[in-house]
Image (cartoon, rainbow, N blue to C red; front, side, top):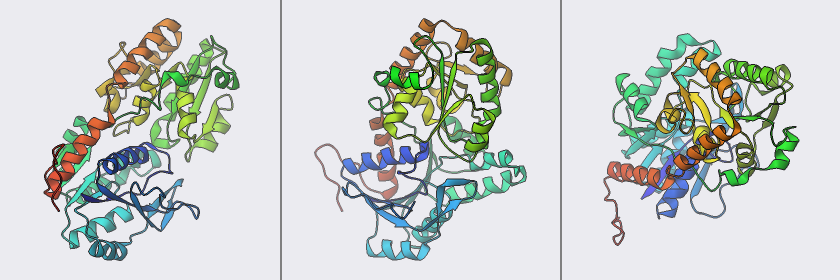
Length: 388
């Protein structure tokens, strides 16, 4: 197939959606599909991929207010119309709902191209975290209008599909997430890195990886950190990531080690060098960091929804508590910190075994089938080829 994948976030940006889309695009390209990624240019030094595994069409973009590290694409409808008239794709897949995504939706509709979409971020639920709770319903209405103009919409969990269907979204399908268990592995544990944190072999190192933004529930996270530190003064807290709250949080909590964004290899070392992973977010569509931490051999504490609900078995390979039960979450954080190191290690080993069964190949298989179905092409058998 010739596939145009339109997104406003993609590597070299570092976030869960960008990395998910990168895995999907590379997987499709390695299976012989011709994929063109349409995305905003992220800087003057940002150039299209050189190895031609897949093509990139870079469009102008502007920083997103409150998220200067992310860019929204401009509505280049005319450019897309010309590009797709000259080289008509079999299908357009739209991964984000911003100005670039809407331009792609409009252009693909005018050209009568098959369109699929994916739902990666609960933008409508972010409103209350930024003082705009009154926008929650209009935001949901816009997202519903957007996705209902596509043939199918893919989301990462069955629970989210049920929720969105109840909210009037049509054609919901499941597109889960995989995890790279070679990149994220306990083998990357690094005692010299722990020493830079001030953590000795027997000291507690708690890790958190995320975008540093209001919707990630940092008041609860740092309340837990403070309680753990009160009982374990030598404990160290490592927060990996960047975002609009980083400066404010680093000033308020100078005893926490804030790393900023890290390249993937360094990120893997930070995961593997911790002792457990805390995640307090209540707004995830999935939560890739949860499965990355599990693959790295860390027990994870999180609320029981999205990826944790699917993959964590309470007190078997991690810890989950009821959704938005603040008291239970804080209690579980203190208990996990006070648990014997051998028990945390056993939970982490079980988490790693779970992660080893979460294959990107399986995810890409399903994505490929859905795209073929919508594009009205037949999935090739191992000995067959796709007819033009």
